[in-house]
Amino acid sequence: MGKLSMAASILCMALVAALATVTTISEAAVVEHTFYVHEMNVTHLCNTTKIYVVNGGHVVVARAHVTCLRATINGAFIVRPKNGRYPFPTPAKDVPIIIGEWWQLDLIELDRRMADGNFDDNPLSATINGKLGDLSNCSGIPEESFVLDVEPGKSYLLRVINTALFSEYYFKVAGHTFTVVGADGNYLTPYRTDMVVVAPGEAIDVLLVADAPPGLYHMVALANQPPEPDPQIPLFVSRGVVRYPGVRPDNNGLPVPVPLMPNQHNTMPSFYFHNNLTGLAHPDRHRVPMHVDERMFITLGLGSICRDGGTRCKRRRSNETIVVATMNNVSFHHPTTTSLLERYYDGTGKGVYTEDFPDHPPRPYNYTNRDYIPPGPLEEALEPTFKATKLRRFKYNTSVEIVFQSTALLQSDSNPMHLHGYDFFVLAQGIGNFDPKRDVKKFNYHNPQLRNTVQVPPRTGWAAIRFVTDNPGMWYLHCHFEFHIVMGMATAFIVEDGPTPETSLPPPPPEYKRCSANGLMKP
Image (cartoon, rainbow, N blue to C red):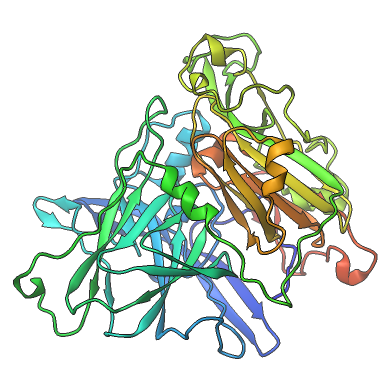
């Protein structure tokens, strides 16, 4: 399926009894799916919660980017090779492994609280394919676990996807190893490991071979987080079961093996995992552009704005401020009553957005100094920022290089950065401050990963990407932690039309419904 510009920079969506029809086009066929989005009540941990689902609870859609709804509206589109052949042994079965979170709080209310600067809410549990697992229980009754039935000797292609709002996850299966073969819809050089690390927005494809003695084996998804002085959240974990045939529910009287997991505060396995991935070299594969037309250095961090709208207020996470997330010290203001793509297409963007998103931060500093994490006099001088809808414009067919630099300003978490409309080459990742004289020598031009989400490493690291602007339109760039999105760690790229109709932004389809002043759809 070719790249298509979608009018989805800022989405409008009727939440109750909504209807959307998606047409999938390929060389072989046209397939239409109708998705009904509606409410339903679900009970977990002795409490009933209203959630938003698709088609009666069958989770089938990929990218709910409306408030926090992707906590329940999520899933996978799986595209298989046209000829049926993979560049690895053909698996017996495709199995989506969707790691998520269970929220007892209404998700619309959660979004309202975060928009007001309240980030004290947390999910109750991690989930694997919607199941909380037997580590969660109410009144002594354990929650249901996801069960993967396998046959000895067969291989299974696990599509490990993180749809959680808050956390990156470690994923392991006791007694088994994985071979990583793909990520974000692109093949990787096969890589053996006993653990997958997946950040929000990432999709990692791994082969699992059922080569252990017949029995039951626990699979575990464990959320990681940086240690103090970073703000701390509860431990989130879920586990399921890999089940071989002919095994009793009590594992034939034997203990069910549990994988040994890293400490939740040890985030270095994330860096090692992502840094060990390379793209599968192939003659027909896209090649890294060797020249660069536009370079950007984007710092990722936190800051604050005054609640009264002024510039003078008490900082250091006081009640007089709202903590926001920034890119190059700009916190993105998300329009709520209009679509940015509409305004751009109609030429009516003046007064809604500006095209002066900065290519570098306003002033350099030691981005990785952990003394900036706790509120205090050191970080206070760097804390003030502002909200604005600042975008960046590129001409068609421009080679763009971006270095993302995580900072220690009020946090030292990782940042899974996701660009809509594009795959990009991940040239290198590192820990500490990016040094162009030293680190450019590490760039991989031979077989870099081709991704749409890059995990900028924890403990204040950096990642360098490169791509060509060959897909006209307006494309959202954001961190995939939901609290960072709401806080403003985002912008959008405008890509101008190319020289032909095929390289130009198409008009909206006739059935497209535009946003009205109250944010709802109108004909």
